Image 1 (tube, rainbow, N blue to C red):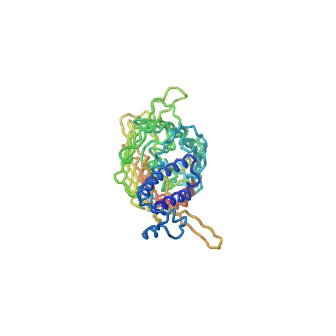
Image 2 (cartoon, rainbow, N blue to C red; image 1 turned 90 degrees about the horizontal axis):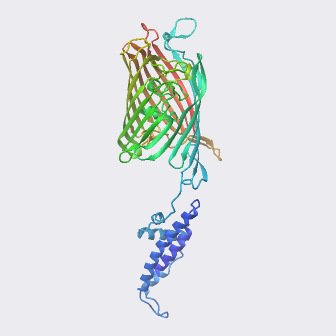
Image 3 (tube, rainbow, N blue to C red; image 1 turned 30 degrees about the horizontal axis):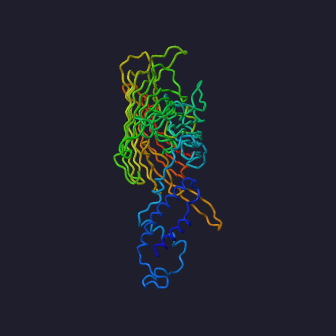
Length: 550
């Protein structure tokens, strides 16, 4: 009889624990059927057990030992649920596993196009099966800065005139460093796409700097292909280095290192038109690969009409250590690039055989249009092919992050003017090392699918409100401190563009996953390629950035 009561209790418990709202009717029926099938099997066992027990005449009292099993206090709904859960667990019956085995009709991609909206670090609309998805977002970064510059960087006189090569003067200011709008998503399950435009890019036209709208990410990617895994076509970043691939939304310092501006990002904003194959390899995605063919440009508008210009770029990464979901890791990476310098057409006619390349960098803080900002290291050369190698090392241990990269670039047949003799090779190099620490216990988030850092998520978001009782409530956000040494050498073989040493100290306050404040102090020593000590000196600056993305 106790087993019969237990069976009744199970039935009542199932009725009381019906599936919660939000499930589809098909799934609710599948789960209910799985539960009933499991209970029917148990019921058959119970019937067999009851039939085997001794039968007594109705007038005969049952033996004394059965009375305590029949008589007892009333049972509550919570107790019924507990009895059901314990019994099902003891008999190793998994309702979820049974429901998963229920046959479901094959889903045809695109047959259900109804979308629902949610917030996923930005507005996202998606179908139930995620075969169509649209994210609408953007980013805004407002910078302000103050500078102190040695007089030696300017030509003596009543006006501030920069020494040769510097281009412009340092000036206190405010600037929207980035203002981008983005739409990205998935279509037909296998195709991802992105369309992003920056509204505060700049270029120098007619001797003056002007702001323009320019494309950044503008590509399509075919996923889960044979052999190559993923194929991305369009305007995108070359896979050159760790820091370059980390989004500007997630950079720990206000500006990247000198390598970014000098070798793979300055004149063209870090994006080139091309095609790239990328993916992961090894057990548990232990490494990444990315190889692409691009058309190099010297502008932010993703075009080049020079015949024969190309860039072949590849990156391979490997995780040597991975524990605690990435809170302990050791990452190594190597990037290689074979490319031509950028050719130009003369009057729309034949391509100019004398390709040019400008190696130059702006400083570690900027508070004005990029085209108006000083270039403390700067040289323009004619040349042919160039080869680039970049090594990267990243280690995370809890709240500590160590990151370092070093790059070497060689330009063949380098010369200051097209008429100069051939045969020289200009080999330039640079690198950085930085150490970061979260004061509030967070850790940098590493993406195994991409091989670089992504969004920081504070353990507690910032808030400051007064509750109904008049008390002030406060959330701290996430706090991070960091220091970086940054080096660039553009002097070689008499083709000298200058040497820079930079130290940067920073504090980051992440208010929530979408907003942060950054404070940076920089000290840059310029060794100018001019006679004597002309143009040498120290630049100090203090800058602040308010950034948000969605």
